Length: 295
Image (cartoon, rainbow, N blue to C red; front, side, top):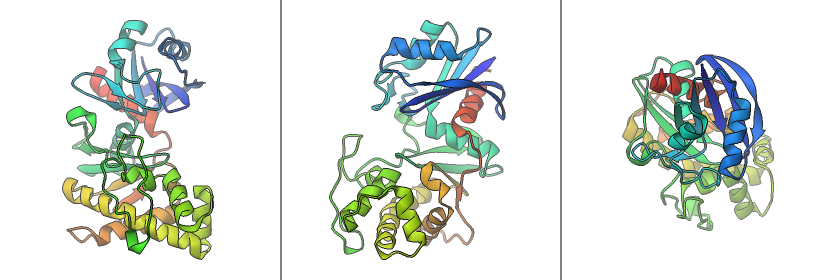
C-alpha cells in the first residue's frame, strides 16, 4: 500500500493511494521544525499496513546524492531525505519536487493528457516548473530541470519603469521569482503605485479597469512573458499547464498566454497556457511517480 504525502512550507497532507486517481485522504499535520518531529508526524499519518511512501515536497532533490534543498523547511533541508526516512520508518521512500509532481499529474491526467511534451509552471507563493516528456519526468543535473523561476533575467526598467532589483530566496537577485509570484505582483504594485494590496485585490482592480492595477499587470506581463517564452522556445511543449494561486485567475492566465505567444519563435494560433485541471496535483503526482519508481 502506497501512502502519498504533499509537504509544503506549513502543512503535511497524506492520502492512501489505491491508484493515482483514487486517493483516500488520511489527514494533515503542521510542518514541524525538527527532523524527529517530522518523522513522528509522518508516522502518525501513516497506517500500519503502509508498504511504501511517495512524497511531493517544496524543495529540489538532487537525483545523484538524494539531498534536498528546501530553504523554507529547516527540518529536512540538506538531508538525504529518502534514505533518512527509509531508515527511520522502515519502508521504501520516493521523494520529488512538488512542481514536478504537479506537471506529471497534468501531463497524464489533466490538461496535458495526450501531449508528448508538457512544460508545467507554478505561479503561486513562488515561481517553479517541471518537464514531462513521453509520460516521464525529466529531472536533469541537480534535479533542477524546469526551475525557470531562478537566475538573474529581469530588466530593471520594463516598459521604462524603474524597479528595485529585489534579492531572491535562492541567493541571487533579479530572478523571475521576485516579481512573477503572487507575492511578487504585490511587491510590483507597491513599487509602481505605492499601494500595499493583496494579489487578489490587485487582480480584481485590474479586471474592474482601475489604471494603477492595469499598469501593474502590464509590467508583470512584460517581466514574466519574456523569460517564459524563452523557455518554451527551448523546450518546445505543445501545452503549458499553469498551477499555483495566480492560475485561479483565468483572465490573467489568458493575458499571459497572449503575451507569451506573441514572443515565440514559432507562431502559435491556439492557446498554449491553460489553467491546471486537477485539484490535487501534489498528492496525485506523488502517487504517480511513487508507483512508477517503487511499483
